[in-house]
Length: 304
Image (cartoon, rainbow, N blue to C red; front, side, top):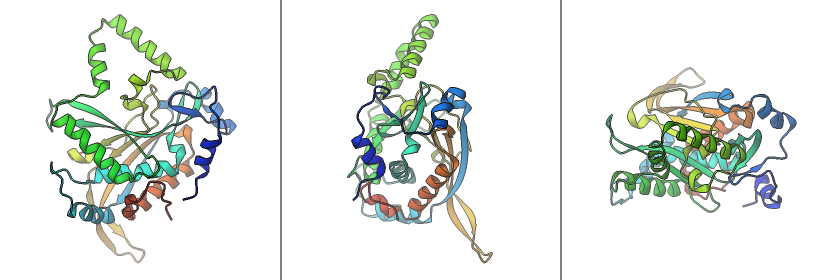
């Protein structure tokens, strides 16, 4: 496949002194995108919230085929969560501005595509939670299979082996400190965050240093249209996946069909791109979910 313009740019570009460990400084951005982080510096003050309905008719057919001959030892199957996350990974691969973030008053492009979500060890009020961080999207990988394997292994580790994530482990230790020391530690964390020098040992397990933080509310029969972003970290994209439901979809002649749909809510830092870019990205997401078989091909396979 021919390389995208973004791939070529990243290959030719030398490391710049303003780059961070987790991203490259977007020097080529226009004046407005360089100025806005100073004028409106807080990510939480720049949230754009979008909610779209996605037709899952073809997605369900695809999952039925995918699971038909699957002989999984632990009874773990391909689900809509795997499918939606894989589709989003492909969108981000071709729409790199979705992987931009602003920190330290500068615009950066993240070095990798990553997702964060919470795993509930049991579906009960008092059950413990664990964070899952997934890094995906390298050339040559098949998005749906890569995510399925990584999510399966992580869920198995949390629910069967009772493992905890690094972020939870660190917080468990820190909250034992006296309040004045804990406040001092958080000041240091925010200083490191601003200057892009947070140790990899801390940021690699932190959900606020990922491309997209995902909340799969549909798995617990809930619905929401919005989730806030945070000023801490680099996460500029939050996705809520709601419960699947039957929805009347109208045809041009006025007739309608009842179809399985899912409402998804997107909260994005509006400073990283414009409305047209976000809108076209959602159109690409719908295109993939209407033809999910493309997710069986390497992530760099173009979308017609």
